[in-house]
Every structure is written in C-alpha cells, then in structure tokens.
Amino acid sequence: MVKKTKSGGEDGGSEKPAGKKAPPKSGFLRDLQNYGDPDFSIYMRRAFALSMGYSQDELKKPVVGIANTFSKFNPCHRTFPDLVEAVKRGVSAAGGLPLEFPTISVHESTLAPNSMKFRNLMAMDTEEMIRAQPMDAVVMLGACDKTVPAQLMGAASAGKPAIQLIGGPQMTGRYREHRVGACTDCRRFWVEYRAGRMGETDIREVEGKLVTTAGSCAVMGTASTMAAIAESLGMTLPGTAAIPAVHADRIRAAEATGAAAVRMIRANLTPDKIITQKSIENATRVLLALGGSTNGVVHLAAIAGRVGIKLDLHRFNELSDTTPVLAAVKPVGSEFYMEDFYAAGGIGAILRELKHLLHLDCMTITGETLGERLASEEKHWVDRRVIRPFDDPFEPEGGLVALFGSLAPDGAIIKRSAATKSLFEKTGRAVVFSGLADMNDRVDDPDLDVTEDDFLVLQNVGPASPAAMPEAGFLPIPKKLLQKGIKDMVRMSDARMSGTAYGTIILHIAPEAHVGGPLAFVKSGDRIKLSVKERRLELLVDDAEIARRRKEWEKRTVPMPDRGYDRLFRESVLQAPDGCDFRFLRKE
Ligand code: FES
Image (tube, rainbow, N blue to C red; front, top):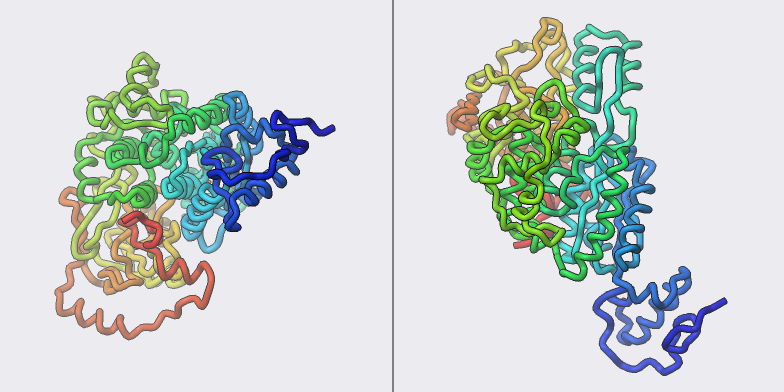
C-alpha cells in the first residue's frame, strides 16, 4: 500500500509540474548530480530513494552518513555491525535519517606491502564519499591504526560536520601465568623465540592467546594513540576513546555518537572549527603524556596538513620538554593495558592533569569547549597506579622527541619512554643494511661483524621507497647478540615502528635515503653520534666524502611503477615531517 503524501502525490511524486527552484542545501536531496536540470536531478534522486523504501517524511530529515569500515579482512573492526546499529538508533532518536555506506578498510596485518601505503587511499575515499553523497553530517567508524587518521584527514578536507566513533581496544588474554595483549607481548615472546629460549610449540601456543577478543591492539599502540588524539582534538564524544571494543559502554557511546551527529548539523560544526593550531597542540601534549606511538607524530602532521597547519618538530620538542609522561600503558611500563587505562579514567584524566598547559577555548564536537568539558569532569575518579598526577609523573618529560643533525636534517623521532636510557648519549659504529632483503639475508649471519655497541642502520625503507615506509624500524637484534642476552641496542632507519614496539630506535629519518637524504650515504664502519639530551643525530663523516658518495648514489636507477595507485603514491607522497600525505591533498 503506497501512502499519499501531504503534497498529494503517490510514491512521493508531486502532482504539480516541477518548477525551477533552488536545489535543497540539506537532506537527501542535497549534493545533486548535474544534468543541467536540477529539477530532473531531484526527481531522479527521489525515485531511487523511494526504491529503498524510505517515506517522504524520512527523506525530509537531516541525513547522517555512517562510514562503515567493517571488513572480513579487518579483525580489529569485527564489532562494527553492532556499533552501526547503535549509531542508527541514536541518529533516528535525534530526528535524523541514518544512512550507512562503505569505505575502504585498512588492517595492519592483512595488507601488502603495508597498511601505511593505503592510508591516503582510504582518506581520499572517505573525503570524496562524504563530499559527493547527500549527507549533512557523518559518523566515521575507525579502530585499526590507519583508519582513524585516514578518516580524520578525509573529513577535514570534505568540510561537512563529522564525528569519529572509535571501535575500541581488545581485552587482554592469558598465556599460562602471563597476562598478554597484542602486540607488545607478541614482540616480547618473538624475541625469546628468536633467541632460542622458547620452542616452536611454545610460540604456537602464544600465537593463539595474543588476540582473544575483537578490537584494536590492547596496548597504547598506534590505534589507541590515534583514538586518544581524536578525543583530544575534540573529534569524539568525551570519554569514549579508550572504551574496550566489547564493553557495553562502547555500544552506548555509539548510540550517543549518532545523536551528537544530528546536533552537529544544527550547529554546523565542521572539522575546521575543531581541528585548529591550538587543538593540534593539545593533541600533541596528550600524545607526549601517553608516551604514545611514534606513528602518531606522522598521522597528526597529516591531519594538521589538511587544515593548512604545519606540525613543527622544533615546537614538538618544546612541548615535549614541558609535558611529563603521565600514563604507563604498555609498551610504556610493563604492567598495564588499555582496559586498565579506561578503568583508570581514560583520556579525560590525562586532559585534566594537563589542564594548565592546554588551550581550553578549543571547540569540541559536542559544542562545548574543552575547558567546559573538563570543568564538568573535575570530580571523576582516577586510578593513580595507571595515571599519575602532573607533579608526580612516570617521566618528567614527554615520551617522544625529535632529533636533528647531519644525518637527519629535517628530523627523526625517538620514543625515549620505551627506550634504554643508558644508550641515549653514545657514539657508535654503523652496521648498515641497504634494504629489507639485505637485512633479512645478513642480520642473523654468525659472521656478521657486529657488537652490542654498534648502531644498526637500515636504509631505503622511507615513504617514497618501493617499501613504502613499513613498520620495519624495530630492527631485529642479531641472533648472536640475542643469545648473549642483549635486549636492546641503537637502531635507526627511515622506516616507522609499530606503536606496540619498544627499544632505542630512531625512526622517520628525513629526508629518507630513497630521495637522497644523508641516510643514503652511510656506510658500515662510519661513526654516528646520538645525543637525546641535545636532540642530535650526527653522521661523523666529512663533507667531501659525503659529496663523493652522493655522486656515486646519483648513478643508481630505481624504476618507477608504470601505473595505478603505486605510481600515484610514489610520485606524490611527502616525507614524514609532512605526514606522508600526498602533496596535492594538503591545504596550502
Ligand atoms: Fe589493528 Fe593493532 S592490528 S590495531
């Protein structure tokens, strides 16, 4: 039975001939395709909308798109069907029309050569689908490492009201007497296995215990760091970044997020009002106070670039000098996981401790300023075993710091909160691997000339290289040193490192070797000086010798991919300090 509408037509059609009028600016009839006849476009849009069974009254409501990144290739997003249903409830209850749509989903372990290569593709997909489809606001569901930054980048460029719903971290599992969570413990046990202290059967048993629930990694890896950044920017509902994926609070957060999206339409709260220089600084403080993932620096730079802001690494160091590490969630410390962090007070507790350093006038997606949010949470309980007060921190300075010098003229990053302090001021002999294959071939060679005092150097794994900046910066310690009981040594590269990894590891060296950064000219036997105190990374080779090596390097030929995304990526990707975004996607 087809209902007659107030305008009198059946199936929503008008009895009057369509007149020329301005196309709607909101709802399902906005953002029309252009046939040169807007009335025809409306007529066509309505015809197809009606074919989905929506009534005219529904189609008059503000539309909230729901960017659903559920994928059977993405185990971290396994809960998303339930979350989408909850978001829809929230949107409908608040008077909106929820319309779910798919975008690319990017998971760490199921994409070759690595997920980072596809973050920008996902950001482009997200941006264009938000812009091109008729929605007044969007709820973006993300969890695994690259999905949250990709969505924030896309939303910032699309310019419609947008709110992030985080999928949430996994709960921990048990391996014998050990409490375990992906993926700091994955690495810890793998080191034991490589050193010969665990057998094949044992490591297989561990493999089955590391990821026992849906959700993103259970530690303060990149996914949890990006969730924290999203909340600190003001792009999620307060208190929602750290809720575990399988916790009932997560479903309630989804419903509330849907309702908030409808309110954002009324307030026209677009991302450029929320992602600002000040909120980027707030998010940087939180990243530093968490000792969060080094990847967070790259992603934050990319998000900032979408609203025309440069994340200055010198300013980053100033913030690091005055921001203590307040949380001890693995890989910082050895005890706590994200479920503990959520129970301890979550991001709100960190923000309140940093309150005197933050820009409290920043707007958030609720329409409240950050200051108003924090004032309303003053009496919230905090577990001080996990989140320390500002004047009694875990570490007096921020967890990450940028290094500069002749080996990294544009900067490099070290996560000092997960590194060995006794290695911070040191000069060492370089043991160089020219790429991933070379490292794989030689690192465990018993004849490799290496001691624990050497610096392992990996080249040609930066963003513009064919390797596309994998998380290979956690260079394996040579087996013969592992067997001597060596647990850490200085390692450096133009690669990234998983946020779940640890060690005295220098990452994101810029410019990268592939484009002729000084890293390309390091040879085994060179001396390198590291000083975390002075923020220096110096290649102790004279300029004439570097110039000679550069001439040699210029003779090499590296073929460019012929076509497709590979080609676009290699031609357009920027260096780490610019977030590895594509040059044509940043806002100048
Ligand atoms: Fe998805 Fe770690 S693999 S968050």
